[in-house]
Image 1 (cartoon, helix red, strand yellow):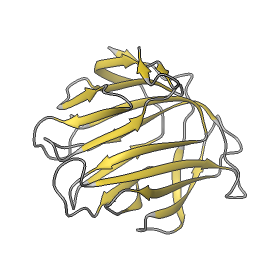
Image 2: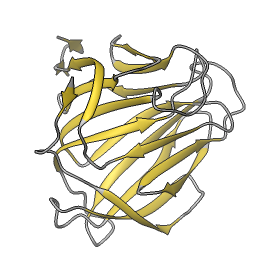
Image 3: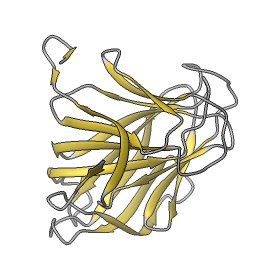
Image 4: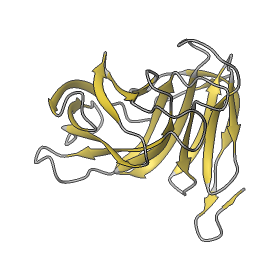
Length: 204
C-alpha cells in the first residue's frame, strides 16, 4: 500500500543559520510550493532532558542528551516553526508530511504528538518494529524491539494548516531522530486516519 503525496507541500533544509549543535537552532529552508518559506526554527521547549539540533542531509537531526532510561523520564519536547524571511513571522503550511527516522525500543525510545484537528494521518513503514498507541490526549509511536538505525524505524505524520508542530521525544543518550519534511510516496503497513475532537479529546 502506498500513500501518495503529490498534493503535499515539500520542504528542504538547506543550511544552518544560527545555533548549530544547540537546543535552539535556525535552519534555512526552501519549498517549491511555499514561496515565502525561508526558515525553520527547531527548539527544545520543555522536558527534563536536553538535546541538540544539526543538519543531516536535507533533514533536521535531533540528538538526545538524556541520561535517563525509560518513559517518561527521558522526555524532550521539541518544536518546529515555519518562518518567513524576517525570521519571526510564522507561515501556515497547508498540507505536509514529516517522516521521522530511528525510533528504537522497547520502552526507551518513542515519539508523541498532541491529538488535534490539524493532525490528519499517521502511518508506520511497510516493515516496522513500531507500535502506534492512540491513547489520548497524545498519539504515541513506540519501539517494540531493540534495533539499530534502519528502515524499520520510520513513521509518518500528516498535518494540515499549521505554522508549527511539536513532538515529545523520548530517547536515551547517544540516540537520534531525523525529521524529513520533503514529501515522497511512502510504503505503509499500519495506517490510521486521525480525527481528533479537541473539545472532547476524543479519537474517532
